[in-house]
Length: 292
Image (cartoon, rainbow, N blue to C red; front, side, top):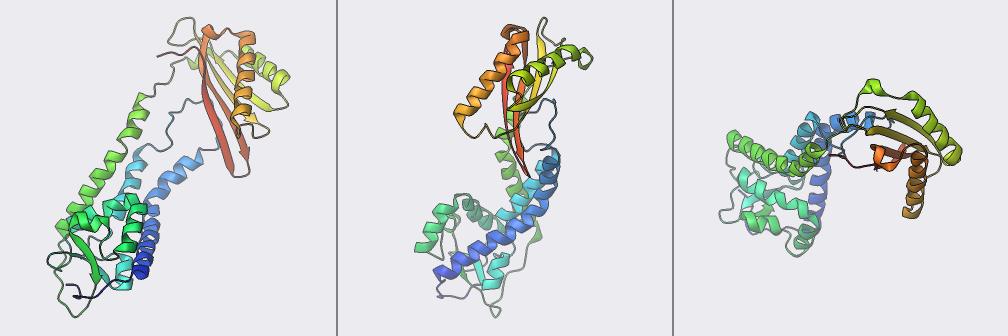
């Protein structure tokens, strides 16, 4: 049970919130790192593979979301997160003064996603931010001398499962984009190296001072009479920084393509990539006739 009638200082409370965020981000990153490492490993590989327009996907995303769910459940063990244990604070039921249930702690912490609002509310009311008012809780001082209710593992586990389930809802839009992406089907064996090299030479002659192009032309696709062309352009300067320069570059690339192939005879994708040191910027655009 919390110490009655003891005010919570706004400065201490805000610092506690910051420290909680710091601790939980470190814990969360343990679950996010496998996905980050996997995605980063292929981020600098320039290939002709058709990629969906989504950065995070795959089984490791579900591992990463578990880290996010733990962030939301940071107070679920007796109303005391790591920072609250340092500052001797506790989330309690506003009506009874007893340690808040894991479910109430879960509800209050979902409001962390609107942290600017919570920051302002905490300045005015350190003991009860917006999440506390919705969940029926408050932050109070903690005392060892007051008997605490026992930890209920099944309630904590239920809160974690609910939190994880709600986190899964956040990836539905991402998964819908992922599933809506349908790569153009073409036959690998139909790669026409003669036309590919001819196009690369045209790009070199016209845009050689700006980029180096790698091109693959596939004669057979699922669409009769339509070729698939993949263009990967390594830029020598960052022409992607300004919209006008990027548009001029893409127009020039389209003109090079049309020297050999009319627009209605092919479909494909062009990647424009500028890489410097450990950073990379890329723009991907559809070329030719759109297909479904």
